[in-house]
Structure formats: structure tokens, C-alpha cells
Length: 102
Image (cartoon, rainbow, N blue to C red; front, side, top):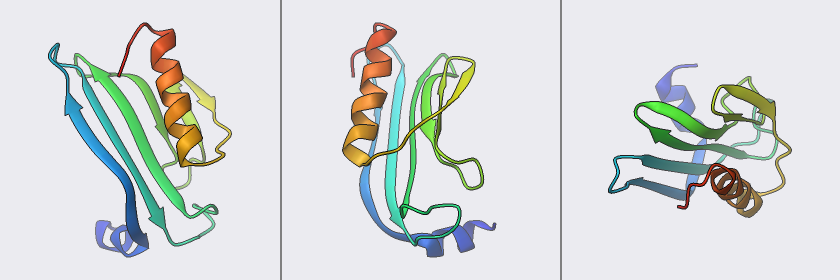
């Protein structure tokens, strides 16, 4: 799907935040309300990522066609999406397991 076509899916930003920590780590969170489609049946598109030295340590996303999942270092696991609040909480919990505080 083209970038323009993807933009037509977006209804509103629910939450968006990007922060570069003092140590250079990057936290980038984007949660959007989108039109409900086969790819986004809940009407939510998201990407939450924590990057260190150019590598994703933790990433949650539901990129079109890939469904809900998360990446912890090099391992991909399915993710059971409930709502935006639980998504942020689960992301933070996985970071804490790696000794990382937001």
C-alpha cells in the first residue's frame, strides 16, 4: 500500500511520543486510530519501539498484514492486543524485565 493510501486510513493520533534518553537510547511510540479494515480489525495501528545502538531491544507493532506481535531482542512472539492502555503497560513491563526504565 502506498504512503498516501496508508495516510487515508488514519482517523486520529491516540498517542505519539519520541524521546532520546541521555545515554542515546530512543523510545518511539505511535498509536493511531485508523479505519477498521481486515488488517486493522480493532481500528488501531501501533508501533512501540525501544532502540539501543541502532538495534531494537523491544518492539510491539501490528504492521499491515503481520497482525499483533512483539519482538524482544531477536525473538518474535505473538501478542494478544486488548487496548491501548494495556499495550503501553505491556511494553513497559517487557522493558523492566530487561532492566530498562522509561
